[in-house]
Length: 326
Image (cartoon, rainbow, N blue to C red; front, side, top):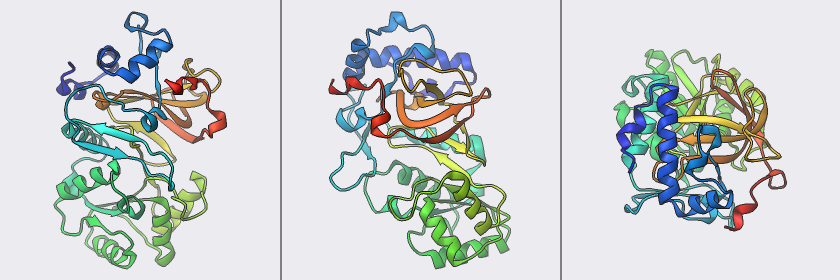
């Protein structure tokens, strides 16, 4: 059994690797789906000497299998968004304290004390469905901020506009976190000059607008909000840790997360830094599901451990996932 307290004691690379290798052994023994995946690759703990040796489970397994490493009761199931009739990912969580500590520690690592901020959430597409891990996180941050104007604004852009103007006039710090299409809607009704507000996009047009490349999206938002940088949050249903960008789309991982890039033609080969490939993630907070995930994002990792997302695989691009029939 892995002590959840240890997950948040990774102060250096050596500690992170030691804990990740222990979690691999634990999940190899206790996660039936992950064990079968490793067996089909002829990988067992005696073969794993470093983080790059660990098999990364294709993220699509969260759509088709029950990914869990414990017999504890499931307290919450987070689910991804999806078009009508499509299969969605499901992340079964048995310890919400781990998720809460993960996102609280991550926020503090990058932005400091939550009580210093008014949290303004513009996440209509997420609020319109059940099971969003992002809504769970932001709702908790709103409550912890204890600011009277913190809250979800859904489609109420006029109230949000007035709140931003008032907070700015009072020199109060704020964090505006929103889905891309809603932030664009907001700057179309009012042009701001924000000096005390961080603007953070969570990505995705959710079918409401034409998809834009990051540079174009951020350019429009920077001009509309009058800010020098647009921040971004990188997370997903299948993760319990987050990465944040303070500008230019370059993300830094929270302390419970590490990113690698795999070869697009050979999913078992980890590439050197600065090369483009599929994004693999180690998320120590996923101790009770699967901590080793091969995502469908394309990107590159830099020498300082930061990373950039440059696109996504389409289904025809996916290599090395023929074990999905498992």
